[in-house]
Image (cartoon, rainbow, N blue to C red; front, side, top):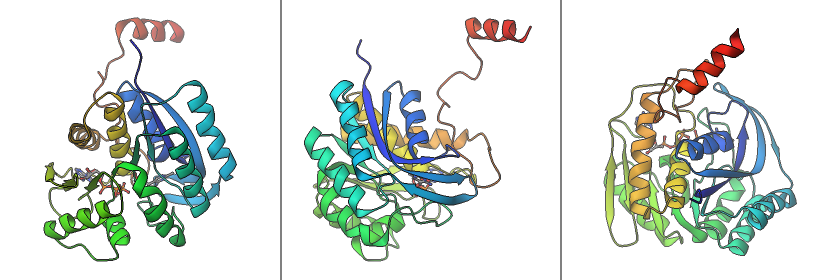
Length: 277
Ligand SMILES: Nc1ncnc2c1ncn2[C@@H]1O[C@H](COP(=O)(O)OP(=O)(O)OP(=O)(O)O)[C@@H](O)[C@H]1O
Ligand SMILES: Cc1ncc(COP(=O)(O)O)c(N)n1
């Protein structure tokens, strides 16, 4: 059977809780073959971002071309895009290859470090959002996209409607930054849905947005409808948060592999014990 394939176009996180690394782990955990086009290298751990190097736009275009000319993909997602020229280059590739796109409109890391230049927000809005099958802003990102504060579920719905008017076919305004149990608002242009989950009380929330959007892309690649992909991704991120391994001294990663049995299968544990002898 042909394995479904998904592509991430995002930044590298050396701490591997967010960005490209989180996306590839999510794809692997959901049995999707993942490919990656790196837009920037961040020097990052669970405590914050120390430095950023943006890739030249041509290198990003070439990575996507190399993947598509050989491997292909059933879906794609974007994460950190850093600057207007990178957004323009990615948009051209999305059009060239007709990619089925999930956009996580990453603007800042957990600790507040900027991952998108302020002046690039308008390019994101006008050039990339119209190409999206799904866009998944968190509350501060949704506020930036609509230029208004959001303080209630009703305002989240209004935000989803305004962002939908900016071009994406489906919008998920994520409620992770609100108080209480997180409620994500989904809008398909005519109907609203609410995806509710219990709030997991943990500091280990690094990469939740990346992981959630990668899971949506993975379920789309596996053939789910957009609604079903968002529903399944919500279950996936909730359990990944619940099983966070507690790595690092700050906001640690979630557990992308919570679905998998914790014990090594017999064939591998025998091999590992033989290596140890
Ligand atoms: N503590 C939590 N418990 C349960 N679900 C959560 C929690 N925090 C976030 N989520 C869920 O995780 C997903 C990602 O949402 P969030 O709002 O955290 O995105 P993000 O802000 O882009 O990520 P990050 O804060 O890591 O940058 C959403 O479905 C949200 O409801
Ligand atoms: C390279 C990179 N990309 C994205 C994020 C945001 O992560 P998230 O919003 O998922 O925590 C990050 N911290 N680093």
